[in-house]
Image (tube, rainbow, N blue to C red; front, side, top):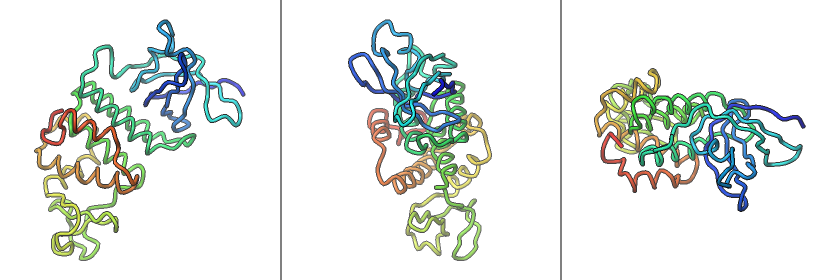
Length: 255
């Protein structure tokens, strides 16, 4: 088969042998792909420095018919989001974004919207730094693009508008109910967090993440996003647990 050139974001990599590495790529045209980078682990490899996590690249791949792994021939860096002196917040935060993206994207299935979302969030992180608001933005938009974020504008039981007053999220029903109809069951999302959820769906990542957000509202959005992610994936992402443990992101708006 002919070599093909794709635009991609490197999500993660792991060793295949002493000198070779398997790289997980999110591409605009083909979803996630796994590819072998031969010799990438060797000190003088030209590929090694191009294939670090959260690097935006143009890569030439060769895929043999029926093979699960492509082979990387050449790679050119567009932008490295971790850079030469990565901070702890970006290392652990971007590791989480990469794992979540890999879980949501399907292999060999195009997902241009998710690709553009991740790229926009990384660009915003370059401009304003990585904070909780930016993580919540990515989580909730990624859930929406995957069809996993219900419409929380009104209570389906009584028809009352709840998007500005707060609601209780029922995961099993995929609904957001008002206080009276929920009878205090479900995940409570307060009025400020409910309004910020609407802002996430209307604003760019940089504009939302650079705004003022209370710690309480961000905690509400975190509980909602993490509960929806765990409900649909049926597991808790290891990278998020590590992020919270190492950096304590649950207690303050800035990482």
